[in-house]
Length: 207
Image (cartoon, rainbow, N blue to C red):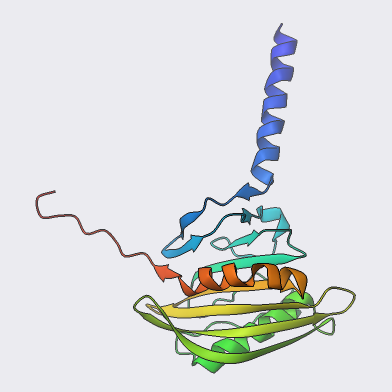
C-alpha cells in the first residue's frame, strides 16, 4: 500500500509539473499584467516560460496558432536602462530603453532589438508608418513592422508603445504573412489600441 501511495504521489507531481509547463488559455475580457491592461478576444494562449527564454520575467507571450505562426508579446514597465528582452550573449547586447526617448528612437530601438532576437545576418527588419496613438489618457505611438528571415516565413505585424512615469509599456504583434497575419491582425490591432494603465482603486472616506 505504501509503495502504491508513493507511486500515486509521484504521478500527481509529474502531472502537476507538466500542467505548469503547458500552454494556458487566456480568458477573454480584461487581462492585467502588472499595471498594463488589455482586452483580449477569444483564442489566445499564454506560452510557457520555457518556450520564450528571451522574455523578461514580467512579460508574457500569447499565441493563437503557435509561436512560429503568430505571437503577441506584452512587455510592461521597462525601466530606464533596461532592454525589452533578456540577452545571454554579451557580444549581442540589446539596446536599452531610455525614459527620454523620442517616438522615432523607440521605433529604432525596437527594430534593432528584433534584428538581434532573430539573429544578425539572419533577418532583415524594417518599420514604417510611425503614428501617434492615445492609450487612454497616455500619449504613445504605433508603427508597423516587417521581418524577412532566412529559411523561415516572413512576418508582419505592429507595435504599440507608451511611457508612463518613465517606464515603457509595449505590445508587439508578429505573424507569418500572408495567411496568419491576415487572420489575426484585426483582433491584435484592437487589443493593442485598447491597452491602458490600470488606475489604482482609491478607498472611500468611509471605508
